[in-house]
Image 1 (tube, helix red, strand yellow):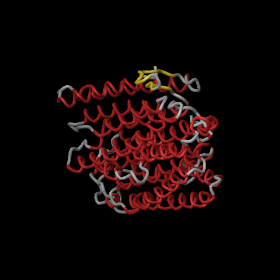
Image 2: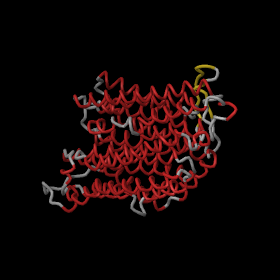
Image 3: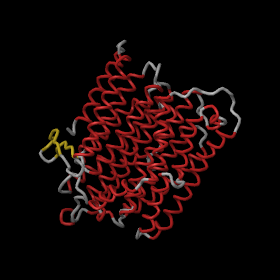
Image 4: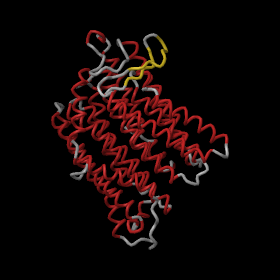
Length: 489
C-alpha cells in the first residue's frame, strides 16, 4: 500500500511524458482525466495512511542494493505530516494548472513532469533510510528540470543548467556525507533520536560532524540555504506559475525533511548539541534570513521577489531545526506547513496576474486590485500571514521560533534570533504589503474588469482561508508536532 502513492504517479507521469514528447494528437484529451484520476487515488491513499496507519509505522522493502542497504519505505509520524501536506497542496495546484496551461502545446508534457515529481516527493516522505531518501531526492531533481526549462527559451535553458549545477553540487556534498556515515556508523535507518551512540562512533566524532555538516549544506541547496540558494532567483521567473508554486512551496520542503532526517533521525540532537555544526548552520540560516529579505525588498520582478522571499522564509525553518530543542522544532514544523500554504498562494496569485494581464513587474500591480479583486484579496491575506500579523498562521510559527531562540542555551542565539526574525518581518511587510496598497488604492492603467477563472480562483481562496484558519485553530497541529518531538529530543 505504501508504494501506491509513489509509483502510480511516477509511472503514469512517465508514460504521459513519453506520449507528449512523441507528439500524439490524442494526448490532450486524456491529460486532464489521467491527472484527476491519479490525484484522487493518491489522496485516498494518503487519507488511509493518516487515519489507519498513524503511529503503526508500516515498513516495506522494495529491493536490496546490499544486505545492509535495503530500499525501505517506512511512513512514520514525520513522514505522514509531510506526505499529507504534499498531497493536499498538489490537488489544489493541479486544479489551477488545468486553466493556467490551457492552450499550451507543451501542457501534457508539463503534467507528465508534474506527476513524476509527485511520485518522487511521496518517495522522499516515505523513505525509511538514508539511501532510499537520497535516491528519491535526486530523482526529484530529474523530474523537476522539466518545470524550469518548460518555456524552452534561452533564459529557461540557462536557468535549467543553473538548477542542475546547484543540484549536483548539493548531491555531491550529500553523497560524501552518506559515504562516511555508512562506513562509520551502525545503521543508516531513520531512528527517532539518531543512531550515533557514543560506543559506536568513538574516535570518529569530528569526521562524522563534518559529514553531517556537508549533508546539511548539500540538502540545503533544495531548501534555498546560503551558499547554494542561487538557483531560486533564476528558475522562478522562467517557470510557469504552478511550477513556481511547487518549487517554492513544496520542493524546498524536501530539503527541509532531508535535513530533519539527518539531524534528528541519523545523528541525533545530543550528538550535535553545542557542536561547531550547530553554530555554523545557525549562523548561515540567520544570514540567509536577512539576506533573502533584503534581496526581496530590492527586487522589481514579482516572481523573483517571491523567490528571494522563499530563501529567507525557509531559513526560518532551518534555524528552528538547528536550535535542537522542542519549541524550535515545533516552530520550524509549523512554518513548514504555513509557509507551504502561504507561498503557494502568493505564486498562484502572481501567476493569475501574469496569465490575465501579462504583468510581471511589481509596478504593474498598481490598480490591479480593482481589476482582479479576488486574486489581490487572496494575495493580501497571504502577505499578512507571511509577515506574521496575528491571528494569521505566520504569527504562530514565528512566535514559536522566537520562544525557541529565547529558551536556547546558546547565548548569542537568544539575541540574534529574535532580532533577525523581527527585522525580516518588517522587510517582508515592505516588499509585500506595499504591493497590496498600490493594487487597491492606485488608479489602474486599464479600467475594464478582468474575468477571473474559477479554476484558478478556488485554490487561491482555499489557501487564503487556510492561512487564517490554521493560525486561529492551531492547537491540534501543535499537539501532533509535540508528539513527534517527544520521540526525537
